[in-house]
Length: 167
Image 1: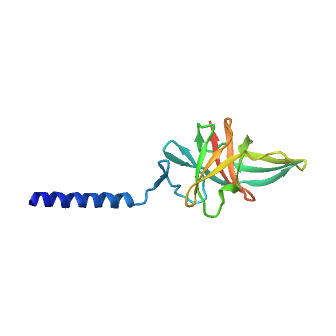
Image 2: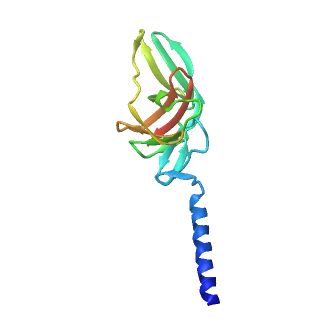
Image 3: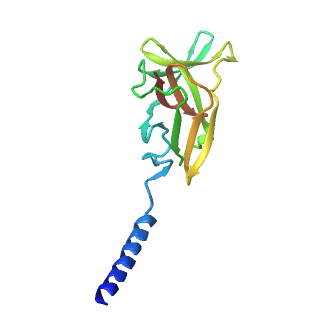
């Protein structure tokens, strides 16, 4: 009889312990991915891990008839082999819908994008979709296949850029 009571008590404790463990918040919520460690920084999704994009500031310049933004360095150290990259983004001050994606050209040891030529808009943002995951975490998908090269995500009306390269 004691063995039966002990076994029943042990089974109840084991189930209670399993329930308590299951109730703990998981750091992996989006398809087995961890939440982005930093707020307002896009992370490239690589299999079951996240790769932080390069954060930088673009400098606005005028050259002849061109209005452009330049970023130091010929290439981003953050690289992906994926032509259709996806990002995980934890929003605080930057709304994910305000992020725009631009292709950059490497020129003279830096990356740049020409926004306008003779006061006509030249660069158009590449289309992306924003899907809520939970709380303030969003999945951002590029709606087109990207060719190999340098790219930057940037919030509208900001010189902050999050750079990466497609190999």
